[in-house]
Length: 346
Image 1 (cartoon, rainbow, N blue to C red):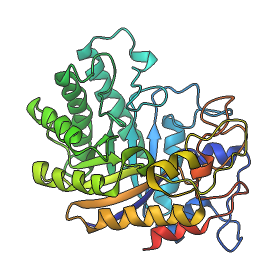
Image 2 (image 1 turned 60 degrees about the horizontal axis):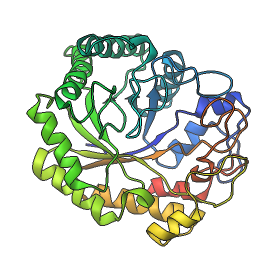
Image 3 (image 1 turned 90 degrees about the vertical axis):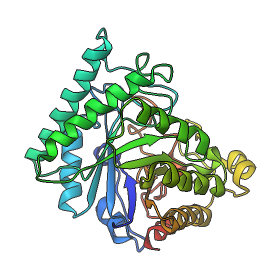
Image 4 (image 1 turned 45 degrees about the vertical axis):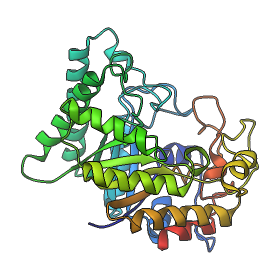
């Protein structure tokens, strides 16, 4: 099983349409995907919303049409592809899991059917374009459930119902022609007891047909490397599944290039990790997480979240907003690659 060194680059098309350019370490202008691949990235993650209307000034690139365009580029570059279903019209994470507007008013069984139909439609479209994903993520950071208020932790049977319908769409698309890995993704990478409870409830409620456990692990939020290690080892013992840290990042600077404050700065990183934002520390943290996961028996990969998302007007966190993540990109404010990209080469 090839160890995955990945990147989520869901903002790339919007960035390019707003004039973003990318330059390798030697200053050569290149395609961003090519730069990432040259430095060791072998898998790309893309998020998909249902009917987005709030993201990016010039369009909603994380819809099916935008995802199809990017998926074809990923495949043409010879990279593996992880598709991340949010099952929402905008960001879905542990703090919010809004039902898509088109599904409003549906009961839980109707929503389950909508999950199946949407998943199947997306996969059929990608299949027809020879841009089929290698890994399909059913839900995004669902440690508190998905498709609220039906799929909350108070209703684990509904969480299992929704996940099973998404998984069914994936399994039907395999049709004996391919093996597609199904991922279930939680945000609590540094919390072994909470992670174990979630997957125990899934199994108890009949949702066990998944292949990979995905974790978010941002060290300034999730705690020490030891906590991540404990979680990965416990998941091996309890469920026997491979684990991917499917989201991580670290800031290379404490400066902001726009009026929107960065979500992570020096006060947080120094307090939680003892490290200040710097290019060297960004590389150091990324390398350490890659080594840690790779050294575990069930460690399957590490993905950096949005390394290409430097500050460009019009490609902020939502329409009319700035970029709160720019200082965690792996390209500087002029699109020049940072030496922290070498982390993927280890």
